[in-house]
Image (tube, rainbow, N blue to C red; front, side, top):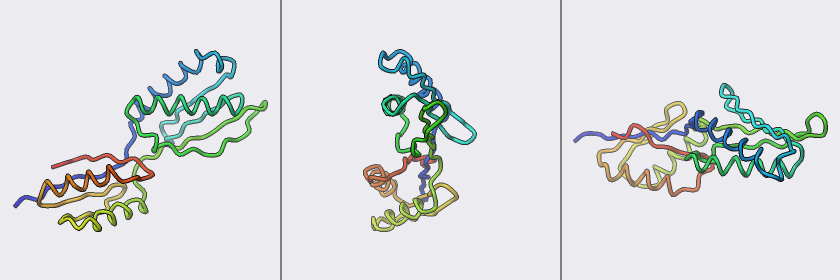
Length: 164
């Protein structure tokens, strides 16, 4: 009998993030209450980091809300955004860094493998760098694992690739 497998990964499409940032900036510059806030959102693709720079806390919160809405509309998980504390910037402005999570940490991989083992299904899980590979003989068992992980309330986004 053939072995089937799939990979559990956590990836973020930086082009979609760039599109979400551009759409957010367009909306921020058009909104009446945010027009004079001179808000900027910059994407650093190399470091997978967003920098929000704005006039005050109201503008920052509104900008974050708009950005999260655009993420959802573009099919990106807002769980991928890890917000740092807002900091004071020059001229009384506020800045905030947002880390974009990509890859599953070792601790989160262990959480996933523990969940899979506790399911009592006849599958094996294996940690490979920043992903978890799940193998089993029955496709139904693999689909049960996918459903279980989708239903779990994890604090990081997951996608399923290489389903064979």
